Length: 621
Image (cartoon, rainbow, N blue to C red; front, side):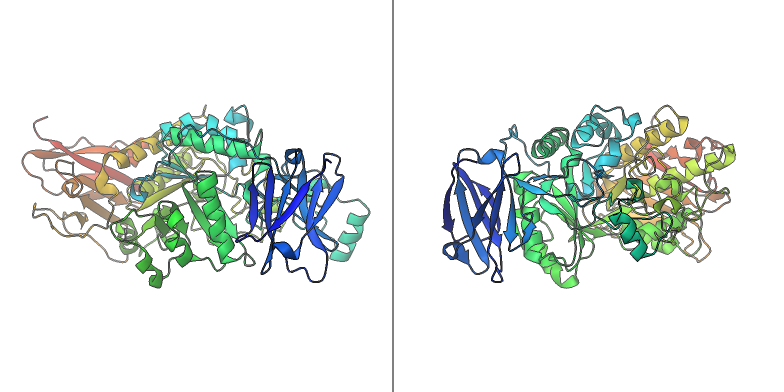
């Protein structure tokens, strides 16, 4: 290790910064009477200690600048007495390059000093409004790890780049990446298949008798991590370059990148804000989904750097709404109440849900956006939602005690896999109904990867530890089910994009504010203008007047029948220059009995458990 020049300075915030001739470190340290400082390592792990000095102290923050010729070849850690730990502000980590690892011992990590230049090629953030966004959830490794993905770099950021044509074809405008900052997925208590007592388990581990496959991984990454570093095991080259390349190429395709962050209770609010600002500036990330404890909601809303970044929050206190400007770029979103569970219940035909459904379908506050999701990484996949009545988490090794028991699912008559055509046809229709619910509702739809083509997790609703075919997407593009569901999802996304009345910036008012003879949104039943909102009703029809989006836009009539029987419905009368045309039905799409061709002024029949969409066209056609 060559000679180094060390100077001290008083920093104003923690972190590491590259200079012309070296690096500046700023670290929090209470010292506690122990010698503290920086450990530098060469490639042979020979170390050199750089102690902290009072000359560089400001409060509990210490600054050290190190200059030298070979610093890019070194790694580093911090020490405080006998304790050695990795910088929580580290921007690159070595020691976790292999996902899961093979050692039964805890892996040692080191900070990386080498920082590479990157050509962004005039990259800009797309800044797509929430109301125009189609958000697609991705677990970076699971998305392309299976061999059926046919990518050159499976399970990596590069694999996502290879799937950009697929995302474009599907109609996605933004991806939300589950934790892909650095974390140690193997840092978890061992699992013993024979359920030994803790004392015996510890003894067996010390004797080296624990098998690697008995360890449960935390594949999802919802734990404390290195929040400033991209995950090395999700990269086929330098993680920093891999991640930036992915963002740049997605931006070229007009697709935004959101990251999912989890902050446990011992993370300070100031640290959280600094993390998000860093990824916004350094990696051009477009937004964040944030979960954790005591989140700094008001600080995030008031932070100027994040004013054009999408923020998906778990909650939004009413007292913080004053931070949001009504007519500005709507950049904050929250979950749409109990949309996920109530839509699932409505889908399977539960009673007493029509009123809840139409409220969630229309909800679209003026200050912030709402996120609509039927399925996510947790809980059942969409295919499993219509294939299983109960969870099947035995493979997790917790006696099927983990994961929620409240799935609001229905197996369509048979639990799990089946070859019965009538059951498969019903499941296919129910999946399409769920996708139609998403794409025809106001607010922002969130689709988790694989749900668009029927990917199954075999009934596992808590696959956090399944780094295998259970959680990996299986791209069975040679099957009829895959192709039909994918084609339907593409149609629904295209329909949403083509009709702005489905995704307005503000909530529809249920009134004729234009004086055009029709309200912006209205509700109907078996008879036009007379909805049945009773407890036992499972049928409702929604009339959207396109003129409230743009003059000349078509009207839409959305018919929802979640009853197990067919029902008649009447279409509202139109001006003489227009007529109704049915453009979509999940009954027909699922291979069921085709509806009769429309006849003028005749009532329509909507088949059981199906959704139909009618659109106006010129009567002169």
